Length: 239
Image 1 (cartoon, one colour):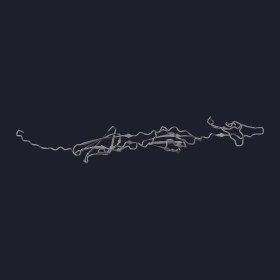
Image 2 (cartoon, helix red, strand yellow; image 1 turned 90 degrees about the vertical axis):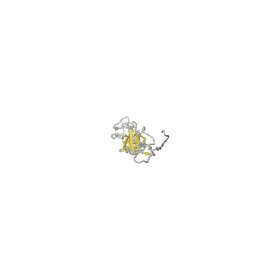
Image 3 (tube, rainbow, N blue to C red; image 1 turned 90 degrees about the horizontal axis):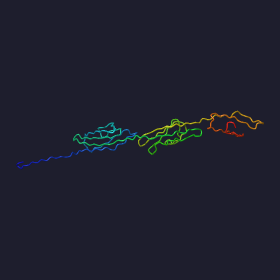
């Protein structure tokens, strides 16, 4: 001033000791068995009465707890947490991405061969199915019979019926199933050796007249005898 007098005053400016910091722990991945997960957030402040608000983008969904530190979610997406201290207006934000793995395994089985009077058991072929240490296999049947290998891709079976394969990915819990049918043909051919015949003194040989049903190129004919003699035609119906 004009008389050279002065005056001074002091004011203190301090930083609020309750500054906020938010952190979200890594989230468990959603999959075929884990259909919902709980997010877990941490806050640096010990201040009570903080306000929490979760929001989501990219297809996420909050089932419950959107105003807490531990919401439950059930869809993949980005989840954002906003923490507000109503006493001083300070805020903190944190985000986390939740992912989902629901990729099923591949289950495949080739058409089965047919059981018959000579092929009394066979192996099913599941080549093309998912393989690896994290895949589990289980064959079941309600009307057939599994001899061995029910936990493999190539079980041995010995009865006709429907056989179902369940493959489980043990990492994500996803499954796939496939079925195949095993048939059996054990129909016996019907044969008749014909009427008895008698060799006479003036008859040194004779022709037998056998019959068989359903004869075709797939049938083999064989005459045998314990105490007689077949001159020719042992592989025909009329030797």
